[in-house]
Length: 239
Image (cartoon, rainbow, N blue to C red):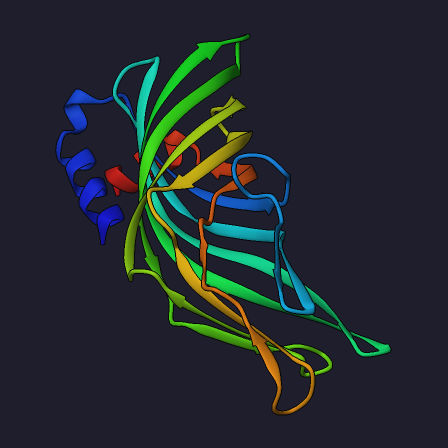
């Protein structure tokens, strides 16, 4: 809906802007020990658990509107899947109990970004952008470990949240083929995205109950974008 609103505003003010381009995004959410996304280690009684970020991904559709030759606005709708891995162990009497589990957490984002360009060559530009995402989270998720010792449940901390994001990358423009972009992104939610509750079972009855974890959801990502040629959009308008 946000994309359609921005698109209608952009085309309604067509005489005041250079062009608008529809684009497509595909990206990865890379697990690195920076930006507040390092592993979380917990312990309780005789057991311990470790929660790690795994490689995730996002994809979606964007609309970029050029306001001047060096400044643009971009909006869109993006699907995100964050992946996590759980490992646990417990020293119970003379035996060591181990287990692993995994889960995914899905959200939908509506970004609004301001973009500043620095020309590097005839067709190459460096892009710097900063913006804000309006994020909506899907339903709660639950999982069991492979040995049924880890019990996991994550519920959304709130169904709507916001996040700030910054991007740095380069793009190549071609009047016939369109625009190609590759860059990096850091995204930091304003508040926790989920509340995660964990248990580690020694058997079917006895278990350790861990304090809730408030997942931050920060990520570092690599982004690929492709924008349709401007003349293709112009032809659609002429038709």
